[in-house]
Length: 172
Image 1 (tube, rainbow, N blue to C red):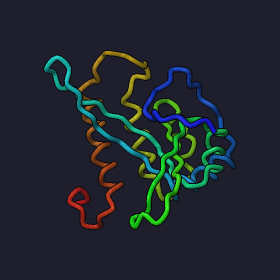
Image 2: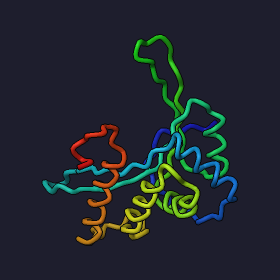
Image 3: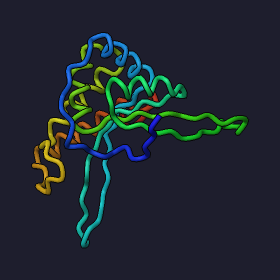
């Protein structure tokens, strides 16, 4: 299996694909059980100017390499592997990761939404978030204020949906 380490790399070579409904249904089950829709914010400083960047991805982690290979064969994306120790360091496990970003993520979310159960709200939030991007890679044009507000709103929703605490302050 060809393992790459960089996840968050957009590709301008993606063209939308109509996936088989059976593959989409199986992938929805994997996403509901093992997947994570993530929206994050990073800041960078350049020439004294602070810039905020928003990004999102769909990430699936699993110890079964054959599952990640199937996902790569059907949906492409980026994959990697890392070793993880148990809390008692009794044994080490290899965790295989698959990540979709950019236009691939938008296309997949639109097609997989009807099949999702647990992560349906997460997926709807990602679709809303991704619609704020122009689609041009490397475009130096800053996003509109409206787009920034939508992204911030989606970031808050994502944090609320992904929180593991039942009484977490973000859930109120």
